Amino acid sequence: MMKTKIIGKVVHGAKRGKKLGFPTANMEPSDKNFTLPRHGVYASLVEIDSKTYQAITNIGPAKTFGVKEATIEPHILDFDKDIYGKTITVKLIQYLRGMKKFTGPEELSRQLKRDYYKARDILRNNNKSNVKLEPIESLSHNKQNIIVEILNNDNKLQKALGSRQKTSTKDFIKTNKEWSKKNNANIYAIFTHSEPIGLISLTNIDNNNDSKVGYWLKSDCWNKGITAKAFDLIVDIAKDNKIKSLTCSIPKTCTASLAIWKKKKAQITEDGDYFIPRINL
Ligand SMILES: Cc1cc2nc3c(=O)[nH]c(=O)nc-3n(C[C@H](O)[C@H](O)[C@H](O)COP(=O)(O)O)c2cc1C
Image 1: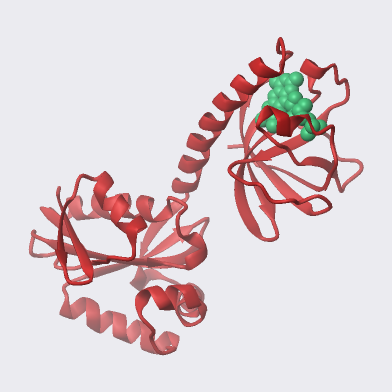
Image 2: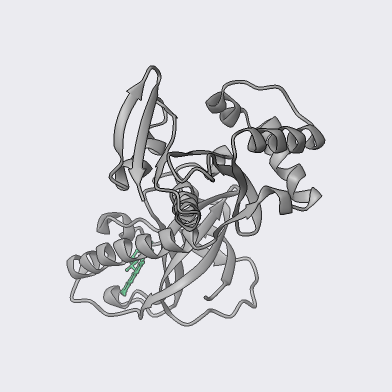
């Protein structure tokens, strides 16, 4: 996989993109000696103010409009904020096609729609393929500290989990050990890009039946398809352990979490403030 990075300031362009339905952030690379990568259209990720967005980026001249100079223009998917003057970072993830001369804006616009859907698929999978699980017992002290720091400082997550007291790494490990013994559970840290971002557990693992899944992720990793991928990985582990069915307690407010189970065609029952999905493996 390619990993080209371009840092630059967003400058005003010809403003044709907006009319096409694909507004772009025209970039001026900060490094004046920067050599442009191969011209073409790329599925890419754009970082703005430490947040990452999915994008399609063209590198090269807009031949359709008679433009001769190459430009770097990410169109950020589902984004409509004004970012003129900001310095952003574009990471090219996958080459999609070459730059072409279209018969006019309509034909270009139709192609951009196809680029949009293709990039979205690629980026979703790119994100997922970086999700890994590691048994909590084998985490280094440093990684354990990161998990505890998230638990202690992520307000949004604390709210979702129900407020809890701050904990030390030592107590956290001790509590987890006791909990997993009592519930016959395995606990795994969820990693993306080698960074621990949450936990996922599987209880009742020796019983072959109705194993309960529990998970939390730090809040800036929500709604990015990471939970779904961690869930796929835990399903694989459950199958390896010959578990026959999986269940969970999902607060009724967590519709995104329930959606993952629905996709797996879970049967869903209710218990007070919780949904109880169940899938057979
Ligand atoms: C993903 C993407 C792919 C593009 N592909 C082409 C292309 O193949 N041929 C072309 O002439 N222009 C292409 N364009 C460039 C558009 O023509 C350009 O964004 C438009 O002219 C708007 O420019 P502006 O931001 O300066 O207004 C592409 C733009 C994007 C964002």
